Amino acid sequence: MSAAATRYAGPLPVAAARTTLKLSEAEGATWHVDGPRDNVRWRDLGTAESTGGLVGMRHSRMVKPFEVETGWHWHDMDAHIVYVLKGWIKFRYDGVKDPVVVKAGACLSQPAGVVHNVVGYSDDLELIEINLPAVHATVGATPASS
Image (cartoon, rainbow, N blue to C red; front, top):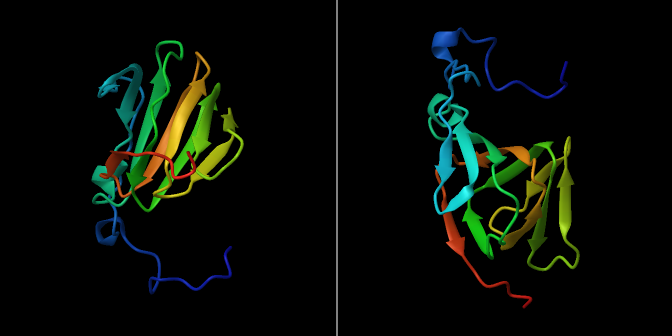
């Protein structure tokens, strides 16, 4: 048990909870193409709906070998977390000398709002992304250190 103070007077009934109960099943899930990047297929995990937009989660799979970097960009969000299920992904971050490689089983908390670029991934890459808030802007950018 946590020693931290609780925010609620006691346990809540489901009907009074701030978020809703939602199960997102893999079987029968709808997989989408990631906009202009036809190398990615993703499915929504339902957290945006169940949290009123506070948290977004998606499960992504690469369906083609790595061909081109995403280009330098940043996300207008409070938190961006990547958990790699299978394979690996390599990022570059503005102001960070060496690339950051995230391998299966590892979790990366990306600095919110920082310019970055995906510069490589394994053919079998599969990951979960967690974003706060669920809906956010992605903006192209030029790294300050270039």
